[in-house]
Length: 144
Ligand SMILES: [Zn+2]
Ligand SMILES: [Zn+2]
Image (tube, rainbow, N blue to C red; front, top):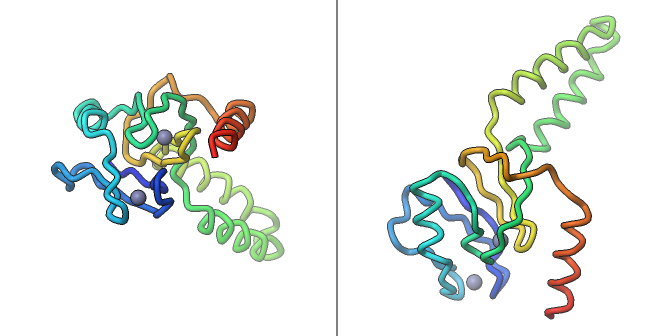
C-alpha cells in the first residue's frame, strides 16, 4: 500500500510505503509530519477515509493503469490493423477488459492530489467529478 503525492508545505514529491515505514510518516525534505493516526487507520482497515496529507475526505477513483502502456498498445494495434483485418482492435478490447479486472483501483485525493495505491475499493469513492475538482482548485487558490 503506497501513498504518493506532493508535500503540501514544500511541494517536494514523496512516496510512502505504509507497510514498510514503521513510524516515520513525514516529508524527507522539510520534515512536515503527515497525520500518523490516519495512516495507522488506513494501514489497519485498508480503507482511505481521510487523507493523511491534507485531512480532506473527498476522493475519486480510477484504475491504476500506466498511461504510456495504454498508448503503446493503441499504437501497436493501429499498426497491426491492415494485417489482421481489424481483428487487432478486438484483441485490444479483450486485453483492455482483462486488464480492467486485473488492475487495482487507485484512490485520488481532490484537495492535495495525493494518490493511494493498493487499497480496498469503497463505494464511497466516486468517479472523477469536475465540479468538485474545480471547487478544491478554487479554494486552494484563495488560500495562497
Ligand atoms: Zn515537505
Ligand atoms: Zn489530500
